[in-house]
Length: 387
Image (cartoon, rainbow, N blue to C red):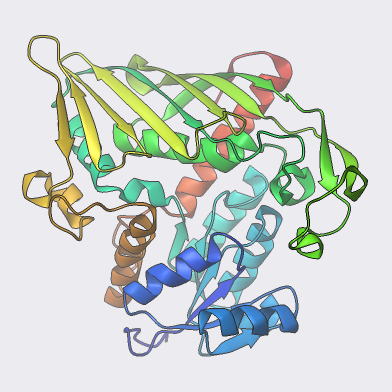
């Protein structure tokens, strides 16, 4: 029988210490949940990163982390290609798993993980943290309680500029590490999950158009750490063919005859991390922008439009649940990790895994894999594809 887990007995391990791994660590510490160890590509790297973040244990391999009986929960913040094998191994080692998106490299892998998590009776989470912004939860409440009327249109975009130049490089550009979809898989998946969450509607069919603006990029000939403190010269790069998309526009047909459209790109100068959605209903509209996350726009036909500011005293109950600070005290990206893990670890500590989770699970990650595969097929064949 599994031991009863509490804040004082639980042990958490982290795999991966790039951009997102430390965000997991910080959020857990804010909740008082102990991070016991981290695994990296080798022991030297793990020890260096563990010392930097004040984590007691360093593991030179993921297998050694899993072998530690004091580790109960594993957070996966690795390149995408490792999500499936690491999640599978962690479940088989009787660990709960919180995995970054995408859950796997294809829907066969993600379906297997959903089945295995159920068989092992383990808590399983996909890190769709954007659900946890208070004003996103407020929009969801307004949409699903019928406050904006019958839904007509779900539209929006997710735009960034960090891959604007041909010399910009990241492992996500390589299909072997990041998958066949890049922009859609990396950021489009967040928007797609968010809209199914806010609207409560599944996507029925898609039609997608892709564009790769840089069919050849300049990849550093050596790891970027090699060039620390140095301005790279043309001779420091090699030409690298690119097969993943810089841009996509996707027409979406949701349930209940709701129409949708999404544009995603990582080459939009000035857009640092802008997820935007607008939902138009028969009575009013709601719109939200992740670069102004504490505001929710409400549009009306017969009265002045509104901007609702984040204030727990004025929000719906579900939005209040993910709000920690009073009105006028802004909350942002790091807080969404904290709020997600608050839900996850409360669920773990209660210990009744027959209850419906109030956070995104592997089933949500599998659904996103199915949607993304349909989008990829549509862009390739120039046809509508049913989910």
